[in-house]
Amino acid sequence: MADVILQNITKRFKTVTALKGVSFDIKDGEFFVLLGPTGAGKTTTLRVISGLERQDEGSVLFDGESVDHLTPADRDVAFVFEQYSLYPTMTVYENLAFPLRSPLRRMSEQVIRQRVEETAEKLRISPLLERTTAHLSGGEMQRVSLGRALVRDPQIFLMDEPLSNLDAKLREALRVELQHLQKTEGSTTLFVTHDQIEALTMGDRIGVLNKGRIVQIGTPEDIYDRPATTFVAQLVGTPRINLHEAVREDSTLHVTNSTIHLPIPAGDDLPPSFLLGVRPEDVQIHSEGGFLGQIALIEPLGVQTILHVKTGEQTLLSLVPGMTDLRVGEEVRFNVVRERLHYFQPDGTRISVERKT
Image 1: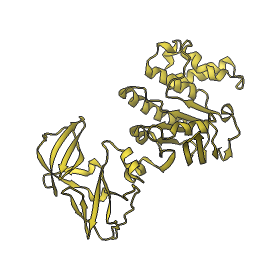
Image 2: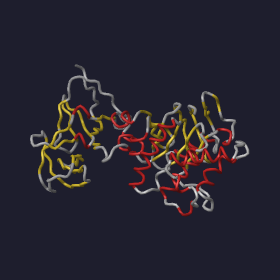
Image 3: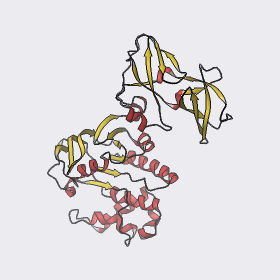
Image 4: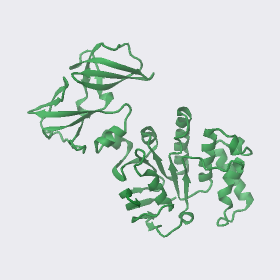
C-alpha cells in the first residue's frame, strides 16, 4: 500500500475548470472519503490520481515520489466504478482472473486460482464463481466488481460511488462489508460519494469538495460538529441543519422573524448580524422549555421522528426519539442547546466563538 499526496491540482476541460488547486493527502492504510454534490469534481480527482486524466497544474505523489510521468498501468491502482464494468459473457471466476492474466504479471494458473478463490471467500461470492455475470443480481455484480479490484492487491483503491446503484438495504449491508474489508486488509482507499451517510459512517477522514475546490478536510466529527462553511453544514446531517438569519443586540441574540431570543455570554465575539445554525437534535421538546412553538408537520421515521416546529415566521426542525403522540397544530415548548450552536458570517464562513470563563 501507499500514501497519496495531491499538490495544487488544477484540471481544465476547454472553458470549464473542473479542479482548482486541489490539495490533500491520504495516509497509508487510510479510508479517505471525498464528499460533494454532482459536478463538484470528485470523479475528475479519481481520474487524475489514476492517470486516466493528466492535470494541467500540480502534482500527484505516491509514497513521496511523483507519478505524473507514469501511465495508468504503471501506477498500480485499482478503480471500482459506479457501473460494474464486468464482462457479461464470462463467469465470475474469469472476471476475477482477468486482471491477473496480464502479461506484465506473469502469474501461473495455480497462483491465479488461489488468489481468485481467496478473494471470492472474503467477498462471500465463492458459490457464484461458475456463473456468468449476466445472471447476477446488482449486489452480486458489485461484489464481483470489488473483487476484480481486490484480487490485484494494488497500492491504492479508487472507488467512484460504487454503491449508488443499489437499493437502500443492500447499500447498507455492502457499506458495512466494505468498511470491514478495508480495515482487515489495511488498504489505502479513496472513496467518492455524494451520500453524506456513506461519508460519515465509512471515512477515517472526509474531504468536502465543492465546485472544484476543497472546502474542508477532517474527521467525521470535525465535519459534522465544526463545519467550516454553511455549505458543509447543509451537506452533512439528516435532517438538514436549521439555518436562520440572526442579529446581536447588546447581550442578546435574536433569530430574525422568530420568538427565539438567547442571552450571549460574555466572551462570545459575534458580529451585529450573522447566520445561526442549529442541528435538529439540539431543538429539544420539553414541557418546561423556554420557547413556544406549534407543530406544523410530523415525519415519523420509526426509530426517530422529525417535527417541524413553527415559531413566529420561522420553522425549526426538531429530531425526537421514537414515535410521538404529538399532532399537527399542537403547541409545544422547546429548548435550544446553546453549547452546540453554530455561527456563520453572512458569506457562509464559520465564526469561531471562544467563551471566556
